[in-house]
Image 1 (cartoon, one colour):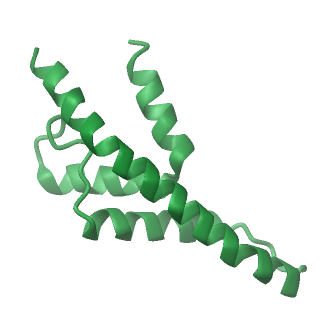
Image 2 (cartoon, one colour):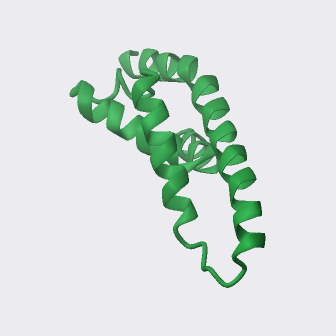
Length: 102
């Protein structure tokens, strides 16, 4: 029953995480398009890492914590949340979609 309460708590923060993740993706894409047009020869492999870092910073300072009831260490829990939000909305969907399969 304790695991169920942990998932209920995580789902309470989930809309914030998804909204933040989608907003960060939109901002990064809006900045990437003019850059790609101005410098078409530049490989944009690093854009994912910019998005990841921006999401991690926003999640950390926004104090969003998806794993507070699952992970005992609060710092590790916030770092995992920052990585999840920085990874994008599709990563959040994959994590919570697969958790129901087990």
